[in-house]
Length: 268
Image (cartoon, rainbow, N blue to C red; front, side, top):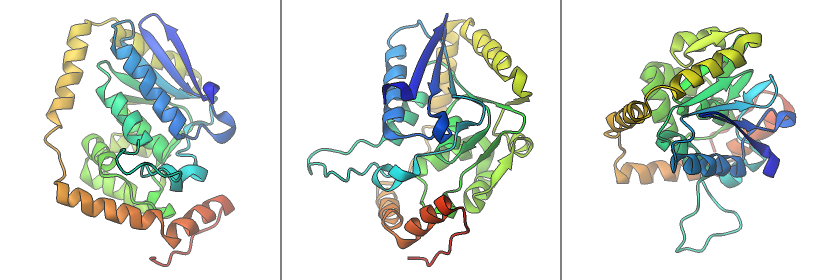
């Protein structure tokens, strides 16, 4: 578990490497929480002024959440049973929130697939650089999962409502050229040049004026803070999430995924 997220530091640039190449760098609660721990530690000092997140190997940035753990953790639920008075930890909120709140820019270096929560992780970053041949998508509707409102908001903020609706409703895997047109990635580069291009960018940012960079990221974050969901609406959405989390359709969707066949949903 300790080796599932690797850390490298070069000058003012830190790299977090999702080290699960044998599982196409799928995410799990431990990795998401460890990302938060590293970023929160970096934030205490000015030693790290840009962070690159990437996957091990050249097959996937991250192919999503480890689907074997999805029913237990996608909504932050603890099947072991939390005490009523303690609030369960949602690894998605913790990990993505740490990226959003980190005072300096975070860059996603996408080489291969960025699917589901892997795509969400990339969208949470400030800048996305992808290699030729990469693919991205959010197949939650194909699996029978109701995606969290905060994640959907992130997509809307980056690519707009129309593109977000298409991504979520279809669940397609899009070519890198299409996702560039949508505005998901900033640049597409040949695989052989991805590392050099990404780290040149990271170093360029890291060696700019720290107070200005931190100030600008703070402004960007504050400009979207007005986007909120009313408490009563949030409770209604949580109820819908619970319904999907324990639905027959979710079982069918995940089973079909493993069996590499088209799911047959019943709406219950």
